[in-house]
Length: 127
Image (cartoon, rainbow, N blue to C red; front, side, top):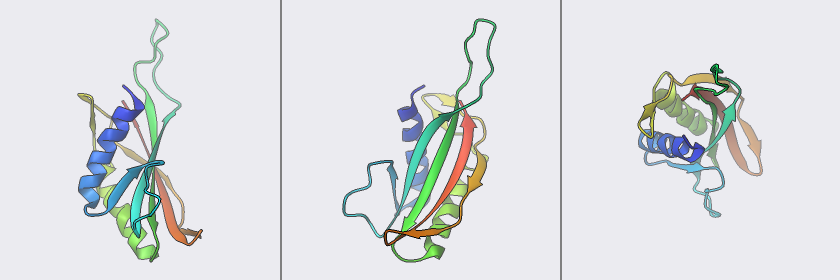
């Protein structure tokens, strides 16, 4: 299971949930940013059960979602609520396999930097 396959499934889910808002993978935000968007990053995380043969049968992932806006904190909070509704406790299908229910991990407060408001939330799951 590749990280890109996971990202593709997440992007499809969030694009539907946040339409018409744009959702981007890290580094894919256009140089002329839309006034409001969501950006995701995905990393492997510690975990999994070691088998007698030394293989780990599952892989854990951490998804970070950044809601970004040029206007209001309320707009990024609204986007993160839509993300939560679309992901939390849901199981995604990635290359024909289902994830564990997606769990909320942490969230930070809204911040204003470089003329943009942003707020981050992190979720974890295993596949």
